[in-house]
Amino acid sequence: MSPVTVVTGGSRGIGAATVRQLARAGHDIVFCYRRDTEAAAAVLHDIHTAGVRGHAVQADTTDPEQVDHLFTTAAELGDITGLVNNAGVTSPVGPLVDLTLTDLRRVIDVNLVGYILCAQQAARRMGAGAAIVNISSAAATLGSPGEYIHYAAVKAATDTLTIGLAKELGPRKIRVNTVSPGTIWTDIHAVSGVPDRPARIAERVPLGRAGEADEIAAAVVWLLSDAASYTTGATLRVAGGL
Ligand code: NAP
Image (cartoon, rainbow, N blue to C red; front, side, top):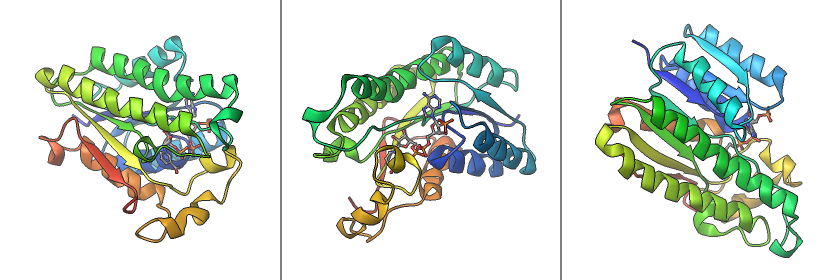
């Protein structure tokens, strides 16, 4: 039986790179996206080109009914063996005092509530040998002053979600880990109003550059694989030394 993996936010950026690498590694994949249907169709095409089964589901991870539909669609392919909690958003950069309540609530809703709704579905449906990877951020320990402290705080909550869930699901032989990317070349920075942020931070990174989505995806693929069979509750920082 092929592994069946759910990836949230699989249409662009880190999620899309992860979907493509997992497909090449033989996973059947159901991924969700929120609105970019064209990008989702391109990723779905690549899944099928890799010779595995897959579906793209338009589902907002903050809506319990849409999350249920996502996991029900995945379960039709077989027992769900993997979840990559990846769908995340930031908001315009700036000092904390300028943060709007709308942006604060949206960042908490997508990056934390959405992760927990998906983790609940996974915990209900998964059996021994399955694994969850939560995409956090190096921001969780750096704090992101002057940029998005609220986002960093929510990512720290994601890290705690991994710690607790790894302990809760360990006896059922389900592993839960975190990947914490540094600054990666994706469209997320355009939403923050600083599309060239990866270039700007390069000189602060020990390796001298921002990362690529494929460099994060590789860590996720490893954590979902049997090669990581004794790894749970871990945070794998992929941040160029930051
Ligand atoms: P991205 O390029 O903006 O892509 C985000 C993906 O998530 C898109 O497929 C988007 O779909 C989807 N999405 C957003 N909100 C959603 C929702 N409510 N429900 C379902 N899908 C949703 O972002 P990224 O840079 O790849 O980031 C992926 C993850 O890595 C996030 O958790 C982010 O916080 C984390 N991260 C990123 C960086 C970085 O520098 N890029 C660094 C550290 C951590 P649509 O296009 O359809 O909206």
